[in-house]
Image (cartoon, rainbow over all chains, first blue to last red; front, side, top):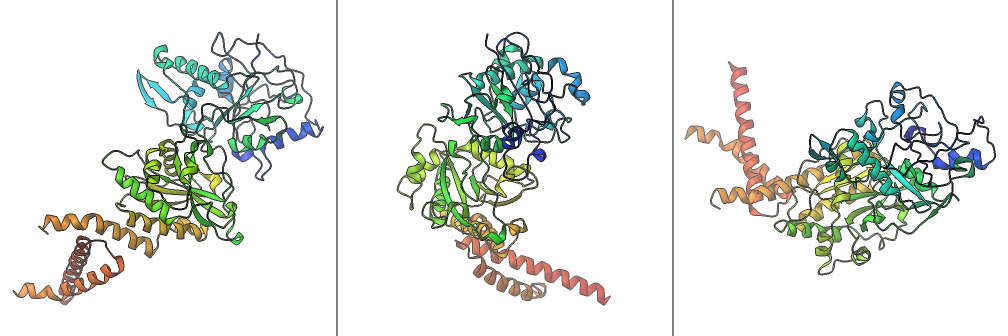
Length: 462
Length: 60
């Protein structure tokens, strides 16, 4: 019988080393260096399980040498102990709340965190839960960010889906309704994240596990960094590309003393988002896909995007000194599309192609992240959104640079907005939050005059 | 006629402000220019009326 080991943890961001040292480097260092100063615990018996989705749940299987805190200090954790599906195996590995206490997560909570829809009195509503403490106030205020790693051919995605559906049923929803539940595709669940366990993480950590799926609720930045550790080997991209907005956070914007950033543009496919090599990035986020009656406006804005911003490949500045503005492209059906679009000047059908393949999922996520950062985005858009530092995307304390193109109706208007956007990018990021400038006021007044002036003249018979 | 004449100065100032604002804002169409001048003129007239009212109160 296949043995499944599931380890889940919630990364508390504050416990992650602030330096560039990855979580796993921090975690595995004691093992790799042979320190093993952790107090040896009695090996915990591994248990064989029915596959997830069958029989009684899936319990956690801490590895023999992983430090386990057997008695959770949180009342809540104790109360759901019978329903515990997974456990954070060590205080400094996959965690824990800010105090280092392991956190137990029930299937219901997994469902609430990862389902693409929530069943409420036979009504299906979209799941926009972003933080763990929205599910249960006792959980940490951390963004839901889940990754699943595979080992020896197990389909981690389907296992997670089964758990989610089980959690759905446990809330009292009908099985038929729960069967329609899928995993979120808005960036909260990141699938297998392009990493696969080539073997146990380390013999010490997973020695007798025998393999199977490992699911980590993890800070993706750190997990990604661990891909370079010997225990992980990169695999070809998965057949189903999962949006990974938080997968690789760009490096923080350099301090002002490090020099100015140069603004550039790029058309980026879903699997490449967010751009990793740039100092920072912004996104042109439309609120909806184009419809026949407003498609021309989308194309005009795209024309301005081409004209006002320089292609990142044309810019004679290293990528790590560029702040790139992304036009997200859904290239799942046409992987080479972005190569065609990333050219110096727009060709006849460039913008039609870019508009028709606009990736609304990434845009929607960016808009939501900006709203969580306290920005008001009420217009029809599109919006230009950037974070400083980029790694803080989606967090309330991040400085957000934003421009609203709601009143833009022509290529000329859009070019003006992009020009101001470029100026803002290229100035000190510390000034981003200042928000007001005479130039922005002039631009806004111009947009208003252009938008309502003609209507007023017509009203008076002009 | 007398009350209309009292509007002349604020209106003239408003129009001048409107022209200046038009030069600064550079609207793309005539409607935008007309809107700017109309708004500044109305604003100037209102401000003039308020000033006149305050002076009247101060005088009484």
